[in-house]
Length: 203
Image (tube, rainbow, N blue to C red; front, side, top):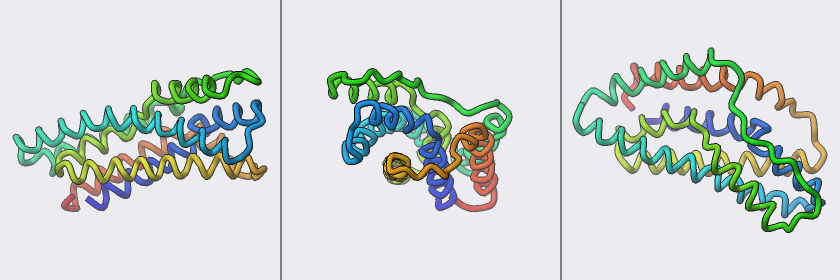
């Protein structure tokens, strides 16, 4: 189980670091001349919408994993890690990373509409890469599924907020654009490593 949580932590951190998760909020914040506190607050609101849609999808898959493990005793020991490896390999060779729609900011729009637009954009583009972890976590019961979801929530929102604050404050040395180009390779590597660990370690 520790391997599953560690993999979910790394994947959540990786995806939160990809600019298309937080750069649209930063662009709007600068166009609207928001203070840093408001920019971070809107990042949290948009991030919550993104996390919510991802978690709702993950909940369905996690419950599916729980039902499967109740019927097939070896599902958690063989099928779940094998699925992680297969999906990880597919991600690694599937090209560039996923993107979220990038809304073009229009200066001086009503703030509520701007925030709602950003939140809706993020809600409609859930991260699919983490879903395999939810499915595997479901084979260990609802407590493990809840713990993994909490990890995803805290790490994703925390990392996105920190990155917006750092970049907004003028620290531009982080070369995250190159990270975005290799996102699927990194994602695939995390999935494969966690899946391989599942064959040798009792989750």
